Image (tube, rainbow, N blue to C red):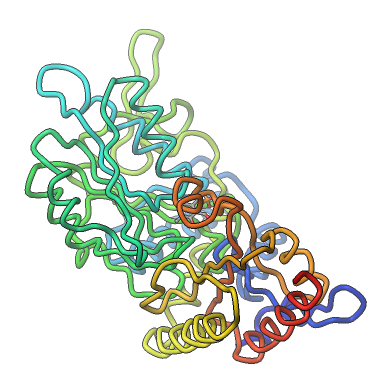
Length: 401
Ligand SMILES: Cc1ncc(COP(=O)(O)O)c(C=O)c1O
């Protein structure tokens, strides 16, 4: 598989093999995805849903094929898939279009999120709070890195309008009980949203099995291009939501007196979309769908066990959270060592990891005020790379301590 990813054979810093363990930030792209984007511009480039000419017709059918692949990949239908710029825009779209639930006669009064959310699933709800006065309730994380589900049951009540939770934490690697949380939301008539940015790349994610109303993710974290993402919204809910942005493509008719809006996902796709991004994402998901997911899960579990085990055997290392499950994401801190210093030394050995707060400031600061070092594997990550990481870690520690 590694040979399908051209960048993985790169050498850095005077000939050292690149050991790319920053996959939670973004994944690398297989040749099929790179070629699909290049092929789009070389042979097809035209606008979508507009032109009657041959290129326009080809591009529209490629774009809508990509929507179908995305839908099939997560157990949805194409009419439930909105293309966005990424997880962040998808969550902003939802927070914006769901605002009306928090105002007026039957207003709901709170949004429930968790302590382990990415900033993309915190800030849009704080902005909604500023607009509507809604309360933000936060399900706490226990010391082992799991969610306090007993507290979740108390916090989600009849006054809750939205429950928005991360599937796999980008910092701790914890896999949350999203089906259970969606069930708690459903019981009180709240909208359930799952941030699947870190799960779609290497797990079966099925919106029907989860039972959520909405699910969001980014193309660039699932071996696809940047600047493209997805908001799945259950059709019955989608039909009730007002538009997000106004412009071309999202209308059926416009006059100065009155405009009528398009039905389905197009109502939320104003303007020229990221067409090559959508085509690249469809290609990436088709590539992912052809993998043996059971083998992927077992491989990621093996890498996770090696990472956690190796870290726990070293003096002064504090592994954050419990890291069960196959997420391949492990964060840690090292007594007396600033994460950034360690990150720089690892980089000098060709090892790319992430240091800092990982856009989860409230969570990371709970474990370590300086942030942490995060190692994250992808399907193409190898046991050799884990060993090279540990060898670089030991050499860096010998310098720093
Ligand atoms: C769990 C999670 N949610 C949301 C995001 C935001 O994704 P994007 O920057 O692609 O919009 C990320 C990215 O790191 C993430 O890991």
